[in-house]
Amino acid sequence: MILLVVEHARGNVSKSTYEMVTCARQLGREGPVTALVLGSGIMAVVNEVALLADQVLVSDRADLAQYDSELWSAAVAQVASEGDAHTILIGGSRSGREYSPRVAVKLDAPLLEDVISVTAEEGTLSAERYTNLARVTERITARAPVTVITPKQGAFAAAMPGTHAAEQFDVDLDLTARRVQITEKSAEKFSRISLAEAEIVVAGGRGVGSAEGFRNLVDELADRLGAAVGATRAVVDAGWRPYAEQVGQTGKTVQPKVYIAIGISGAVQHLSGMGRSKCIVAVNRDADAPIFKVADYGIVGDVNQIVPAIIAALSR
Amino acid sequence: MRILTLIRQVLDAEETVHIRSGEIDLNGSKLVVDTMDEYGVEQALRIRDSGVDVEVVALAVGPERNQEALRTVLSMGADRAIHVMTELALDPIPLSKVAAQIAQQERIDLIFCGGQQSDWDSHALGAATAERLQLPQVTWVSALEVHGQTLTGRHDVDDGSEMFSVQLPAVITTQQGLGEPRYPTVPNIIRAKKKELRIETLDQFHVDLKLNVLGAAVQAKARLHKILDGKDAPAAAAELVELLRNEARVIP
Ligand SMILES: Cc1cc2nc3c(=O)[nH]c(=O)nc-3n(C[C@H](O)[C@H](O)[C@H](O)COP(=O)(O)OP(=O)(O)OC[C@H]3O[C@@H](n4cnc5c(N)ncnc54)[C@H](O)[C@@H]3O)c2cc1C
Ligand SMILES: Nc1ncnc2c1ncn2[C@@H]1O[C@H](COP(=O)(O)O)[C@@H](O)[C@H]1O
Image (cartoon, rainbow over all chains, first blue to last red; front, top):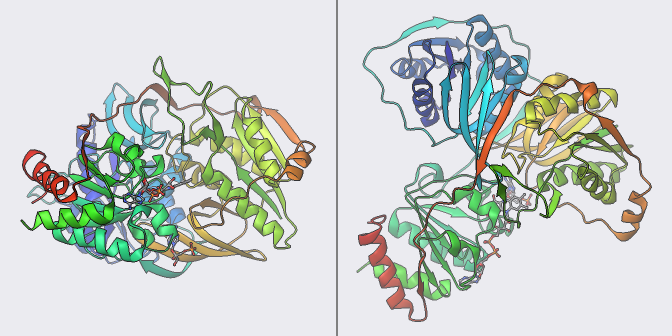
């Protein structure tokens, strides 16, 4: 079977799960697509995912109320072994990417990490993934009885739910106590829409000059366009914006319809988080700034003059 | 306490990636210690600087040139280094087997690993090493404190951050927010030349490769490059808005 571990948050099945279902169906490997739901109080998630998968395995228990890499990897490896899974799909989220290596080691399986495509041919899986700060596309293959795959978020289309609910089974797991204690949680807050889901992103860099400049230029333009707000690490380090808005290697990866970069130089680490956007627009006073090399449209000029002029032009 | 820091030598981010016959070619390019790994070295040194009795051991697995990376880390202040020499390109899963065996031989209490390896864009090495050693892990750590056998700190998760607490031994992967890596000073560079850099061969670790890299390509998306001169700001802005609305059709 193909085992797919359901990602969910606040009672809803995450978009990444719908994408994993597409990945599983496109794979060209035999066996039912089996969804595994781990958590506590997860009936709504189970019912939602029953319209996507061929069968649903459920472990609903108090000690799974909160994610933990050791509990999750132990649970997935047990279910995979007992069910003779040949392919295991785990989400490309931060948590998925932190426990999937443990599953691969437990099952002595290769790990196809953060893949943008994957197909099976006679026992060999071929995949593509980005490397070197998303500048290179590598083609990799794995030939093994069991393989663990994490599909890159956003790389696969979301599957359409069917009308027929798949059968559900409870699974028994043998789990030990968690060793990492969580003493406090802080959820990220976005001023508007979340970055990952936005069609338009307006992002600001050090070129906006100050926290106030960021509000007057970037927030203002984002408001006009109904866009999400992004920032560079330089802006986050300066304390002008929260880390939740950071785009790049150590922040978020986005791929909106249009990414508008205001006063951003275009460092490799920033480009790795937004360089695959469908359309890139840049405003920068330095005509040689690297951001212009990846831009579709742009203006060479001072953000303090250009951005207010753009906002004015949008009202006409 | 003994700390192991895992070191990858990678292409400097400022350098262009060269592909020759479908393979990434690092010849002639500037190579550096992965910045995410340097955060781990810095953190280990800070623990030592705080007065805890610590030995910091750096480990690199790869071709001979990795010894330059290890010398850099010794110059930052690490106590000694181990180089497992191989020309094979190991992906994180087999590489973790080497790291775990070294950690066991050296009786390591705490392992630091970069949150993301910037050559593979991978998060797997720290977690895979922790699994082989049956240790707990905390990934994307942005603040860390040691109190005896307890580590506390903050780390990034799917939709925010958490404060955590875990007992040693453990594996930590790094994130920005940890202290900025220090530069080697001249006296430390001189001292580093005399520090132990032990060389081991790969065969004793019995790794088997499960992944094959078939080819690599740089596929830059073709861009329009319609860059306007902003001397007349209102005119340039009006033209840009017109292009985005009616040519690209990406804004309302
Ligand atoms: C391990 C590691 C991880 C990293 N991760 C990230 C990451 O996730 N995200 C990220 O963004 N960075 C990351 N960085 C940092 C990255 O290398 C850059 O330092 C950062 O992206 C620069 O931000 P910036 O473009 O805002 O600032 P700068 O590089 O200083 O650029 C400012 C730009 O604004 C322009 N400008 C200045 N004033 C004006 C004006 N009045 N009008 C018009 N233009 C103006 C300048 O010409 C310049 O091009 C990382 C670095 C490392 C080492
Ligand atoms: N990697 C990170 N993850 C989460 N929050 C961060 C991170 N880096 C910085 N911050 C936040 O940014 C602020 C400044 O952090 P610092 O640079 O540690 O002083 C703090 O309030 C942190 O909560």
